[in-house]
Image (tube, rainbow, N blue to C red):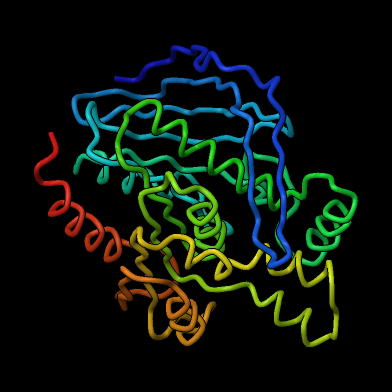
Length: 289
């Protein structure tokens, strides 16, 4: 049944200000003001409900899509890689919902989707470092707050464990979100690794703030902070975009408990990854209603 109702959700105010800090070791901490939300119910049947949720933040709107069964056992904040569309995840969202898991697709800033922003690259790095030096909010840090707020949205709505899951570039943001927000139940990264920005900065002989900023945006900075929550890394041995060795080196920096899984495919989340996740989570959440 197609549903065309539009309704407002979220009674919180955004009068509270967000703030961030980066310590001398380059570790980011964030305090994220709760956004207001606008939700459009798109589809509903006996298996799942799908809706479009816009988070109205102090620094622009962030678009998300939620597919959920009536009573999910757990939930996912999914962070897509560059070029991934919500349409490409339609079947996946139904599959997770049918298995008992809520799936929230976050159209992160700068992906050239529905959420505005600058794509990750040299322009963004220069822009964000300038903002870092002037104590403004870099877009990169705003994205981490968006994911923390997405996790809070799911926690408030369902009161179930919420995992940070990301593919390719999205896996990098998801790792940082899981590290800075201890309320995430764990982290799953698919075809991902560090950016390599810190290595480049060090090789150029920089010290001080450039190193501190570069450290703050590298996902591996936060992997140990996720422990003792689980870390699960997927990588394909013939990945043509992020080398297998980079994914394995990224995994090695995580604390226990952790799992490294080679999957069938090429680069990014696919049906093999989905099946492995759902099979494991079916065992973990078998006793949940």
